[in-house]
Length: 453
Image (cartoon, rainbow, N blue to C red; front, side, top):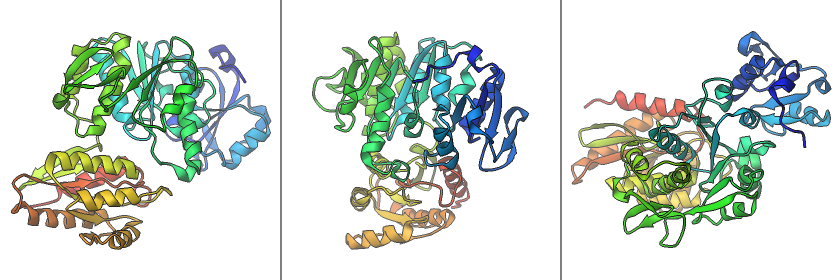
């Protein structure tokens, strides 16, 4: 296997950057600063980063000593096939950037909860006085390349996706976390086992002295304990022994009490698991329980993750646009149901070839009414009818869906002792109508802001 390049190796080297999204553009800028001779390729022609032109004909690929590929570019892309045939090493942007860090690397992966857990870890490290970078796959956020060569940091906390791990050959976190594995991204990985194996790659290069933090409650996570050579630490929500858990109502990590579970500000049982994972990761790194507790009492969450938008005339509107798979949809329904009763749900989008029967069962069990929107709305409606649950309607456009949910919620407020929640939790991808989940969430906010009483 090729060794990671040094800065002197990059100086003058011919490097092809494939894909100019956030990650590719950041990688290109870093490589230019390092003195590499950068060629930028994208399926869309135009101006590239740092003034470099973007080509759609990269030329003789064997002339490149390295290719840095954006995570969104699949292995099946024609340029990647040509690079493999030319025996050009192909790496991910985060993989390359990770070899140039000056501080400790905390890397968080899993199907759900990655962004929230990464943000909690970064906040706890900062509360302990550590100069901390937060980035990677997290959105909104910066790719890891943006931190290389800049301000010195004590710690780097990154969210890592299966797409980034698919090509990883050098990534070696000091602390690696695997939160959970549920079906996702089968449009890219095809099989559940291939998706899980990508997640396990986060631990493959860890050595003794590194740490692996794993969810003891998820049987699909546990095989990661056999990968790499890091010390294993486990968190659990079940009443059993682990390095972090809930004991007599308190969050406990590494034998130290953090705070009562009821004082964690984030909604939902799944976020208790995220909080335990974060505490398990940071306490051995020198963060005191009091600092972790302050963060957990004050952290309200990231945008588009069970985000309170507004409350009008007894109706609370919650934006959970980041929910892009059925398992996350179930967690969000359970969280809102526990706090505010059964919500009026807005759901639907573009499917990712994932099984969603359990999600629709949860919709029928936990929602008062469902407004189905997006590309797969008619199919979801038909499946709910097959289940004998007819408390739903179809509104293809989000604007109409918000108004329909608002009418339904207002009709329910007179019969409820507490506010009725309208929960926007799509459970499917956003690319049928929106650029990404952030664009989708902003659209929901705008439509809620337009509601009048």
